[in-house]
Image 1 (tube, helix red, strand yellow):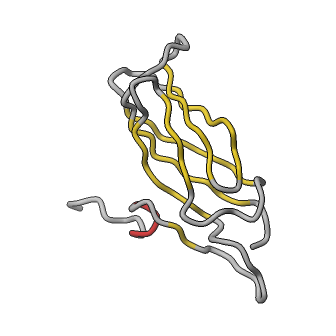
Image 2: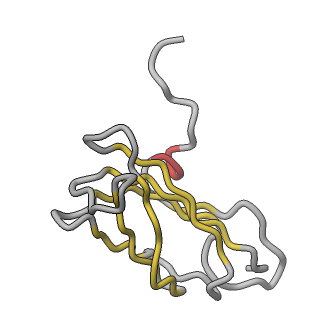
Image 3: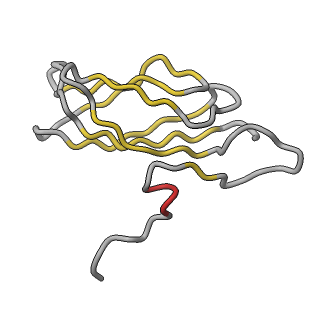
Length: 109
């Protein structure tokens, strides 16, 4: 098959896309994606290019760290973004973790 290229560039490239809209709707796209690298304390912040209409959205992660098990959690969710923490399975901060994230709104844009 060759090179992986099955994802839409707006999704795999840290962009945003609107999957469903209604006439007269406002707000930003209902799916937002991106990648961050946590700092030396295992912390990072995601700031959306355009805000969600409210905080009724789900966040999911895929992580790549220097150990087998990395747990990413979110905190401080707002319409403009959220904070991320990466830890090992013992609860110790895991620095410099690559965190791919996706946020999906449940609200009607």
